[in-house]
Image 1 (tube, rainbow, N blue to C red):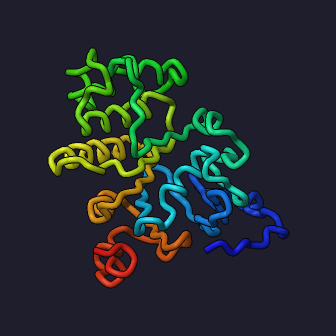
Image 2: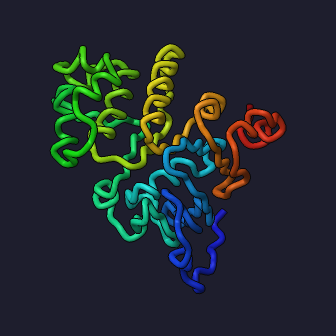
Length: 251
């Protein structure tokens, strides 16, 4: 769908008090393809929000838009984090403001060990989690701290990618398909870790095709369909609504 909306009335969300993470009237494009079509939602401090939908619904585009990556192009809307105007920032400024994206491809830096990947993040943001705290959270990484990061297993690379985000002074963790391609036992381990992170107050947005696992982890859910929100409410409500899951999540 490529209908172009009228933005002539301007943006007014600044007149209200935003939530901890607030997305308001977000419109995002890839070229002239209109992907995210005016969505608004809030994430409360300390909660886990599952951002769900079928393939092509706009989930990853939304995460990338929040992270201010420049691709997709955000043509209208506001994004606030703890009263900071992310929509006026470049991606590196949003990262300094406390936003951390763990992308689906993990992007472990070649040639660096596990520990060097973490130390590099701490050079930029030294107020994040300490190495000892990260190794307590991810014992496997502690065991492999001198191993080159790209030689780890897929699950271990996912752990490293999450740990690298936490090594910075983080307020919101954005996870794009953290369970993709992982064995069930590794998914269990990462889910357990995310619960620990939540207990320590981390606000998290998770995009995941394994919707049931994401819903079991999350407090709330937002479901997208062709770039628009069709549900915003308790995750438990989606788990209990077979008709809703079948229509928008194919489960």
